[in-house]
Image (tube, rainbow, N blue to C red; front, side, top):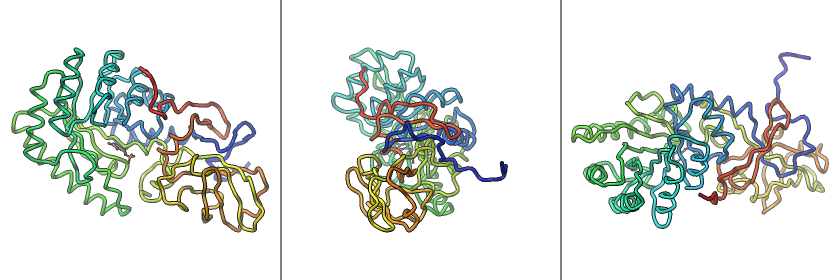
Length: 376
Ligand SMILES: Cc1ncc(COP(=O)(O)O)c(C=O)c1O
């Protein structure tokens, strides 16, 4: 055997037990991504990875074994999955409203071994959360969600944000922990450009943080960063800082292309098969937009390592038409590996993933929190 021969990380010895379209997780690549995240962050305690990317218990357990004990999530089902895995520190990166307030209170009651924190960006939300916590005899941690210029959620830096912090300090049922700064708008492919944008936002954030400290409000915790700002904010040394990338865990072909400097590799993919091949240079595969993320523009939802220049010329619910001169060699039933442009929504449309290690199918993991429906 030629020891120097490059091995294909996506090759699978026997695909006969894998129905298509089938979600795949390449465990070796996942392990490498987790180690690279810990190294980039400067230690597992500086990470609070977002579990919305994978929604999977087994990955939470792998992270826990590596010493990652803080996790971010976006839904109450994800929070419940984390709590049932005995994660000590759970940050619901979402402001609670409506019946979700009581659902959260129930979760806190059911899992006393976990400490729960959520985001707040408005006095009304803070007051309502405090009322529900107090009436349930519970307490919830709060991070003030600041708007880093993404204009999605978050209160603008300034006097109103400071007032909100003062209010939270006075409310029974809430425990003010610190600040949340998710600058997900920073996706500039040019690293230098991204660095300038991330640092300029961070300078403003630090000026506000200093103002808060001067006014006598303690800040124990700052949770920040998505995949794009992760390498830049990982260089910061503020006390209590935690970095919260999510996509880096499984990674995808979009981030591999726009952030080429990141040391992660796509660790999830879809196994798809040729279901029709009657036209030259064209095959139809069983990977429609019901089995991969469809938030990317049509024609740009998947990458095929075997045919890197292939064009997606049409996609319907259960079919993809792929065009490339190389596909003429494919027969009906042949399989291809497709790497989604966006990992997170792809995970959410599959019920389970086949786990591949060293080219063998070794396990099956449920995407446990995919449908928001875990019950308390
Ligand atoms: C609040 C919050 N934090 C962290 C992340 C993780 O960012 P990324 O997916 O770029 O790793 C997201 C992603 O949507 C997010 O919304």
